[in-house]
Image (cartoon, rainbow, N blue to C red; front, top):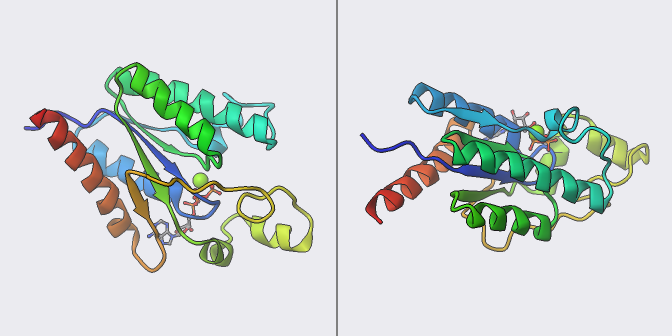
Length: 184
Ligand SMILES: Nc1ncnc2c1ncn2[C@@H]1O[C@H](COP(=O)(O)OP(=O)(O)OP(=O)(O)O)[C@@H](O)[C@H]1O
Ligand SMILES: [Mg+2]
């Protein structure tokens, strides 16, 4: 049997794009295959690891670098780290990838590229309605920047596809990466 794919998979994209939903479902699938998996979810980590940080450019980048640090530690020790965190800035994402490279830890970036209009239509957390009414400012993709990855390892638009298909795509990316590693 192939070795498990030990890697960090960062799922970046707008709020409501499907990052958490895909990460949780993928985690289930990987666990059923006998792999050790952690989901490092942005919402949860903001209540502990990044408690006290806000949504300024600096705080968002600090949050991303901290989560990247933990993901690398876990991955280095054989746990697949799935990271559904918006990570809107290219330079912070670049730092996370560089940190993984420095430690020779595998890192994959998935751009969950569901368009803003679809994310706003879903409006899972009601954030887009609040931004529309002026109750909320600084929403990524609305009045705060989202710097889309130029060369993600996978670009995944979840519009009009079911969850299992979305999970298949990321799972295939992992499998392909594992096969490549085994061959090299
Ligand atoms: N193919 C799909 N893959 C993932 N989610 C989908 C898909 N089709 C529809 N959805 C729905 O889209 C929504 C995505 O919400 P989710 O909480 O996963 O977004 P998120 O990217 O984690 O947002 P946030 O950054 O706010 O945490 C869910 O309600 C989910 O059911
Ligand atoms: Mg989420």
